[in-house]
Image (cartoon, rainbow over all chains, first blue to last red; front, side, top):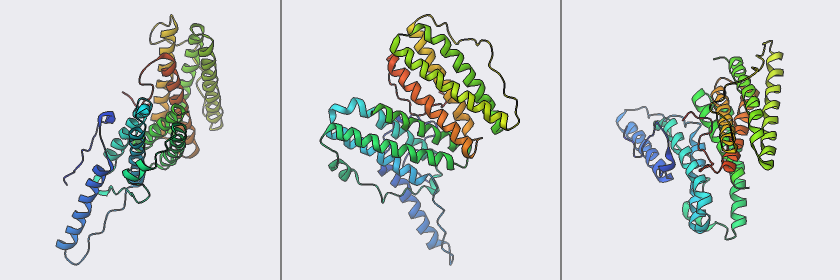
Length: 175
Length: 142
């Protein structure tokens, strides 16, 4: 299987520009492979693999990073404060991508706004923006706690525990 | 390592953290001292919760050592703040490693402890002027 995005095993993705497009690139390839399986595999259609329970969590993480991209674009003066947080989310997305079996990575993006929509919905008032981001981090922290408690392997429990803890520091940084 | 062994390891880390804060306090100004007192109390609370839990499970929790070897001499505010950061980072690492061997409410206990350590480490980095104060993977060995 050829991947269209890098799968990192050792993640320091502060420098990694992971975008939703890159994630979808990988999953698009999975879809093509599945169709090919139907065509060449005879009478029994290939059953798509069950989605990885982390896939939706990854999609939410990528969307959160994009929300910061939009915020920094609209408020360049806040870049110094928001970019490190955005970079943390990107690092998390890269680590999650590496953790998820690429053949079953199917992030659901239906609930996430496109980058264009996200950019247009950035509040013009900085205080409102920061308050909204703080609320988003609190919700994201709750998601990470739930994912950590539900994790089936020690590796995932540790990864999701770190992500949950990191998001709690974001809440603090945005206070 | 079993879950109980992980909890015992976390207890040892909390004992060491409490000792460390006892050293740190003498070198800090008033604002930072309050932060150190709160942090020390939080570690004492966590230690006590672990003692109760381990005792209820029939384990014999290890008492704290009379003294611990510090990773470097603490002689002034800078080294005191550095130790505070290191205490929280190391305790976070022990709790993070424990998560996979803990289940149910014990994993929740561990996650809460990891999170608290990460937030305190962030605060200490800010006080110490360490940049960046944020860490993407708190508790992960570097």
